[in-house]
Image 1 (cartoon, rainbow, N blue to C red):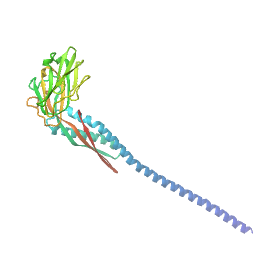
Image 2: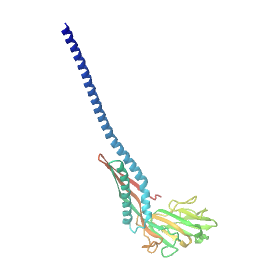
Image 3: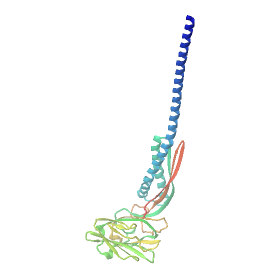
Image 4: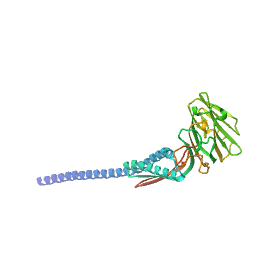
Amino acid sequence: MVADAERRGLRGDDRGQLILVGAVVIAIALVGVVVVLNSVLYAENVANREPISATQDVRDAQTLVREDVGSLVRRVNDDARYDSPSAVRTAVNGSVAEYGTLIGLRIARRSPASLNLSVTDETVGTGIEQDSGGNFSDAGDGSNWTVARNADVRRYVATVNRSSLSTDPDTAFAVTTTDGAADWTLSVYRNGTNVVVRTNGSATPTASCPVAAERVRIDLRNGSAGGCSFTFADGVGDGYDVEYRNGVNASGNYSIVLNGTDATIPSGAVHTGSSASPYRTYVVYDFAVRLTYATPGLTYGTRIHTTLYEP
């Protein structure tokens, strides 16, 4: 009887130990499953975050390039005199590529990615510039001269010194556009402490506007001077000539950009091969940039179009 009782006690102890061991095994298995699941979820999260991060980098780069590239090309246009369309294209292409390299280095510090910028299309125009502050005569000191023939003005901004202006409207400095059949003229002269800007043409009556300033900025192409407004080349057809009259009766600076390079700049009108003003140059005013962004798992390309000096 005692032996049977002892055997029953042992069997009970064995069952208890088996249950305990089984519980431990199950617990270990559950921990293993949890670890595996966590590893899978972590891997999926990392994989999902990579394209999200790359997409955000692309957006940031695209926004930055769109905001900066216009100002960059303006600076390239302004920083040098270019003797040919190919010279300004080369300068613009190099500056845009260098700018893309700098952005790419910033991105590469954060992630295994590369960025490339290249100019795909460029439209070049002729520029006539004076930045010496002198009078508005030609390269040979002629007071009455033709700036450009068969022209289409895209941008035309002049800054005129009041003290240099004539007080007689009949000898005032004047800009005339003419197509042979119709003409339009803007003249500038001094009346006391005011600068008078007067316009008249074949399609519009004479209008004048006093501007109280020592230096007057006149945006001819967009038609503004101080608080006044007018229409540039009103009534004049395409392919007009731009002429200066009484150029010695005005001093300051001006910047003219013509659409395309077909206009004729008369021989002797501007300086060539020297630093003197006025001079001819070339500018890029319409272009597109190809942005390419690449990571091990993503390649993205887009075209960014920019137009400068819009009338």
